Image (cartoon, rainbow, N blue to C red; front, top):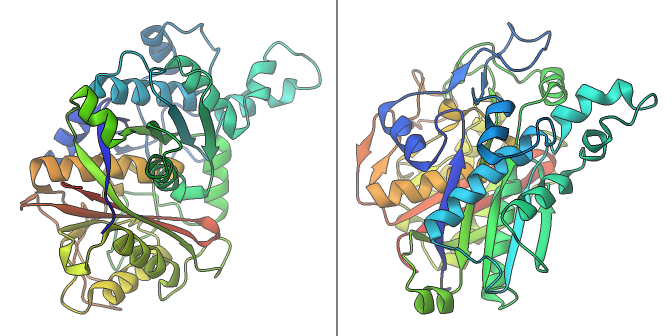
Length: 400
């Protein structure tokens, strides 16, 4: 049985809260963060709904003592979540151990680069936002903000499984002894480019998303940032750290089926869940709750539902729900946000409701949890599936 990697801090900001506590309170009270777009000037403003963080960049810049209009929104959100995670872990000197930062994003600095794109050939007044387009820029800014020096800093961008893969890589680096501590997670802000891209795919909903419902119409995009602090057993013992939970299992696979669609039978998802269970040394019956990827698109929910049936068996699927009806689909960050939610589920022995569910899908008899449920939770399985068939599964556990 593989030993888990300790989680000693967590931070999250999303459409349902500016920190972990606010997010948890929204989850158990059924308070969704889905609304019409207010911050982005887009022709689709009245056509779709999103999981938008209402606080403006200007307000965040003032809170973080940043120069006005110096950062795009993704690193701003990432700094907030990373600092919360480090504060909870009680880390005052981030460089006193071999420490890494593995961040993830799909949007990068797109929200600002698209704003100043047409000035590109005429003026260099906002060059930092053109140059800040790439995914690694937000990671560097987060590393600078938390004071990380001369260590391992990298970025993962595997679409919607990115943060899950960041967590997996961080756990593996601690197990291998490459690092003693890793800050892992990701950040993605809403942008016109992202909205237009998903609109072209015709998978955006004009109303509240309804995961695993027969009449689901598509997803709501969301923005968020979430980070965990992972630490070795040696640090935990030496610093007398309080452990929130453990990254006990993880798996990544690719079903090589389609550029944007998952296999109809959930082949990649099955492989990822099987690998995660094997790494964790657990059996399917050991899983107490599944935080499903559950995007509310016709393809994902069918594929994931069939995959869960293949893993757990007919009539044996544990309580499951998608929390994307609260936050929207936060793209690269989804696995990080939902890892935080998995930790909170273990700490509070609560299963969150799958909002907006009414009608079971005709392909199988699977019904997500629709009310808050109290239950002893030791192991949570969390799925994150990305474009290109990149499927990842994490198992967050109470004990190593």
